[in-house]
Image (cartoon, rainbow, N blue to C red; front, side):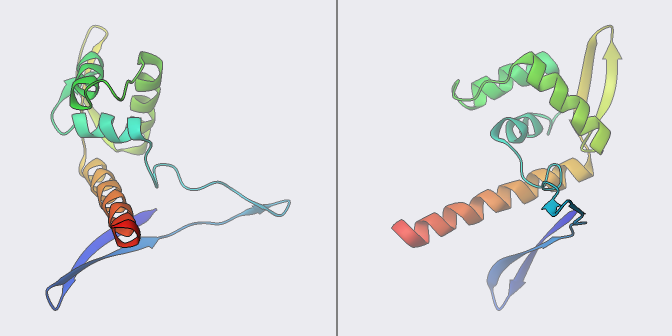
Amino acid sequence: MFVCITHILDNVEYRQYNIYVDIRHIGGAVLPRLKFQTLTEQMFYILLCLKDECCGIDIMDKVSQMTDGRVKVGSGTLYNLLEQFLDSGIIIQTKADGRRRNYVLTDKGRDVLRCEYERLCTQAEDYRKMFL
């Protein structure tokens, strides 16, 4: 589980990331990071599309349009991720009409997306500090 908190102190904004990790050792090895602690580019854009209710084919079209074709999401990847997002409570299914299913972000999904956005902004700011 992770919590992303934005603070403003003396008119300076800073972010505090609290990551709660249950670390288990198996034969001296640590298990991988928590699921959805960070998002892949495809995950990010799928969730971004689900700000408003839409179905799978609409998501594929929106991602391609939003990124000028730079990011493509195949149907296998999309429906696998949608199932994982559903199981994690990041999205909910709003309606089903035959095989067509519509989805939308939950509050948890909005938090996951916002935290990823803030993480990416922090990375971009670190780059600016080093190179610009």
